[in-house]
Every structure is written in C-alpha cells, then in structure tokens.
Length: 359
Image 1 (tube, one colour):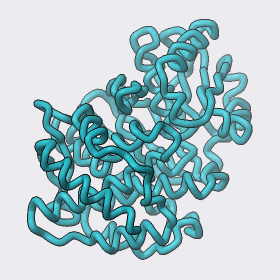
Image 2: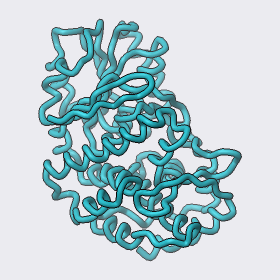
Image 3: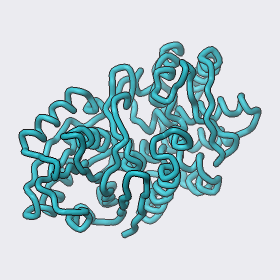
Image 4: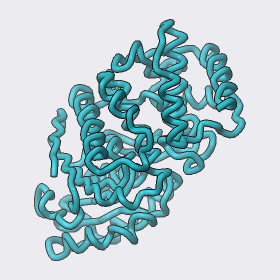
C-alpha cells in the first residue's frame, strides 16, 4: 500500500493505492457519518458494489444508486435524479457520498456531493486507470450538449481510495483510454517520465508493479501542480494538454462514441504539431504516433467539418476573449499556455485532420 497526501488551500486529503482496499473502506474514512450513499455505474456495480457495502455495513446506514455506464450519464437529468435519490435516502449535512467507478462517476457523484445541501463530504474510489487523473484535484462536473464539463465546480474529496485490483477487469479499450492521461502527465513533466512510458510497447501486457509505478508518478505530477494552483488560474491549465481538441472531438462525435483518452491522444498529436509550427522546434511526434499505433489507438476519425471543431474549441471553458487557449510544449517537460486566433487553428487543424487519414 502506498499513500500520497494532497495539500490544497482548502483542505488536505490522502490518496491511498493498494490491493484489496475496497474491503477496508472504514479504515480510510476521516470520521463517522450519519449515512453513506454510494453512486456507481452499471458496469462497476455487479463487480464491486457489494464488496464496498459489506466493508462498511454496520458502521452507518448505506444506500446506493446505479447509473448507466458511459459519458452520457454526466447529464443534467441523471444529476437531478441522483439529487432526488439522495433526498429520499435521508442524507443530511453529516452524510457521505462515495463515488465508485471511473472518471464519469467521479465527476458526477462529486458534483452531486458539492451541491447537495450546499456541500457534503465525498470519497473517490476510482476503478479505472483514467480516473487516476480525474479523482485527484477536486474538479467535478456534468456535461452540456454544447461542451464537456461546462457545468461544475472545484470541490475536493476527503479521501481517494484506489484499489488496483479493480483494474484487472478493465477491457483493453479502457486501459488504452487511461494510459493517454499518463502519457499526458509524462509530457508536461520531466522528459525521463515519457522515456519510461515510451518503452512500454504493449500496455495491455503491463504488470501490476509497472502499472502502480506509472499511476503513482502520474498522481504525483498532478498533485504538484494542483497544490500550486488549486483553481486553475495559472499552471493547472498545463493538465489540459491535449484536451482542447480532445474535448471538442468528444462533444462533436458524441459522448461515449470515442473515449476520453482516445480523444486526448489525438489532441496531444495536434498540440505537438501546433507547438512545432509556432515555435519552430522538433518534438517526438513520430515517436508518439508510433506508440499510439502500436497500442491500437483509433487515429482515423469520422469526417468532421473543421469549422465545427473550431467553434467547440472556442467554447471550451479555458478559452478567453473568443480566442482558443491551448497548452503547448517548448520541449518535453516545458509546457506553456497560448491563445491562438481561430483562422490559424482552422488552417492547421484542417491540415492535421487530412494527415490523420493517412495513418
């Protein structure tokens, strides 16, 4: 078992990583709660819900809600239904919400916790690799038809309990999606992290020791940034590397039609190209695209009008003054934030999408 402590301006919480932690939940609760309400999804519930319930039964009354798996559940209707469920379950200001699942569940359950009676405690129990990123840092949200995570707030958990045994049941598509965020962390950190990741030719065959090390490193990178900039006013935006185009792709193609990690992988490739053109530098673009191809990331996407993607990129919550904000690289490990006009992005994005068709 390993532990990382996250210290922010508003609170401090521990991220505990180990095997079998879902059977020991009571050990990681910061206090006694009047009621506990678990929010999970239809994929995770049959596998791990009753393990968690059994680990806390008797300490507090436990209720739960199961939402449909997939990004489409991060909607205003599902959010409203969960608020109704929480009220019917008798939750009060001394209750706890547990988010048991991947990034979608964490974002959704966290937003419910943040807004129920103006805020009650919640715990993240991630069950995907992707959630190593979303479960840390306190950003919670639901989606709007016009964009991803446009309705949300900053609301940190009181603990993160990461049972790596739950990763053994992940389909390869989810493993691949999660590793895109680890790759993202490697590019905004020192170059040695990317060197380590790039040596893993087949992430599907990675062993638990390597996986835990990569997860820990990714969480440490995020923790260092979040501790310096909790509310994303400055360097926390570095964590959005690859996300400006990635979120636009998710919104335009349809939530669930392309995974978050698959979209971010394409977004990172585009950020590489923009960086190379803007700064007249050379980044390991070919190395990245070859690594993505060897791990079967879908790089060919459906035909999408460039102007639609540019419009969505301008609506991104990071954009300012109707300019597109992107995280770029001067070199691996040296991120920076640039505002770009949509005409330039339109031209470069069109060229990039045409090039993707050749891969």
